[in-house]
Image 1 (spheres, rainbow, N blue to C red):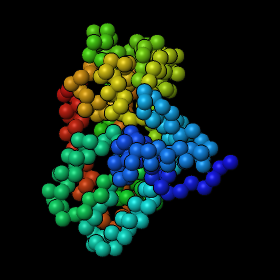
Image 2 (tube, rainbow, N blue to C red):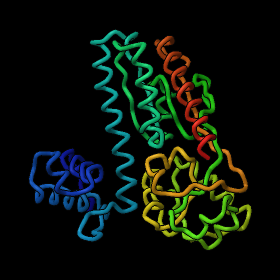
Image 3 (tube, rainbow, N blue to C red):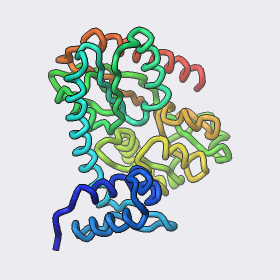
Image 4 (cartoon, rainbow, N blue to C red):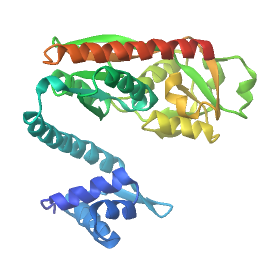
Length: 307
């Protein structure tokens, strides 16, 4: 019989997933490890759901656990928006800019854009959110952010979008892989090949595009691992666990530990740079987009020279 869950259980559950271990979650919540374990156990009992399973002595979220986390994250994001609304009352609205970026661009790319932007606006309060593309698309449509860098199409009368850093997907391989002997990898080369895929969710545009290609050419790689982030996919490749198809920016953090090869058929993949047309911060939005496009142009030139 299901019972009503409480906030402390939810906080413990969220902390375990985000921190990765019960001990790290306990430190973040300033409680003991047994207390966190008990909260998780009570939550599973009250929900009548198995939210975690033990893998090599650690708690790993189940499919049900990740579905629950996605909903909890949406709720907490809403609470944070309330906090930000309170903060905005104490600030000059013309001196703040809210930007959303999906995870693959949340590293060096957005850091460069932010650094350039703040050179011209050092007094601006810049709020950068990293979320999945569907959430950012919702936030753009509901005017919760001014600018969004996302990986999916968005069709809304108040949202204007441009394609950013469009570049063909590349085959990324372990340095010792036999296919490294080829200058270009054909999709047929990947038949029965150990493949690191993105987990199929509504936010993984790369997964949908790659799956459609495999179906079109009747190619069946062996999906040995599925991961939810580009960083994890590329780290798995670097460890020699398989190959993958990614936008080269996805693998920037491991570029010295993997091999890149052109992929045939050429499969362009780009990101969406979106703005909310009803934003009150028109000049700030214009300046941020200008810097984003400038960094994107520089990045595109580097990619073309490198590959």
